[in-house]
Length: 220
Image (cartoon, helix red, strand yellow):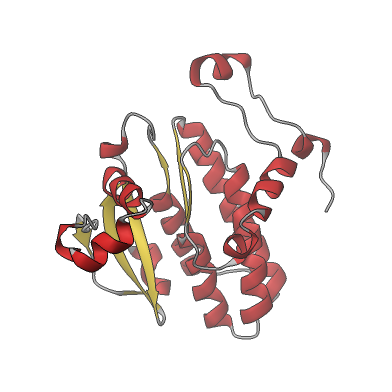
């Protein structure tokens, strides 16, 4: 795999952004090397990834490209299956950043990669309905916020694919963070087996009815 000069280097947009926000963007070569440490998961369509300081999306872009290779290799012979699996891949990728311009650019980059992959795989341009579904999920998953000091204010949408429909549930970042901390403790397995009622498992703040995948773009 070859990279451009810009991709090889750590990108600094401005000294002011580094000074004010600690913003230094990871170069593509380092991104790929880190993802290779979890290669199988990074290529699995529905494996969830969160980048809590995503910048303009360098990690998210690389993850999506890996997932879409899997989608294309398995599903490009049937349009509906390809579409729903592409949305599943998109829905499994999450990002947070302090700066709204980074969020806007990350969404734009991810959308373009998905659209170009669709055209390359199916030899047609995705229609407006499907493009709107892509945009809807991206705007729910790639969000502006402070992942260090503002986790109570960050709300994530969890997507679960059931057939050709998606189930949506909303959770606060603080809930998910608390659950992750518990699940990563050595005692979690025994606690769950012996005192299941005492183990914190995040409960959704809100649940939505199942929705057909192509109807996502029409949701508010």
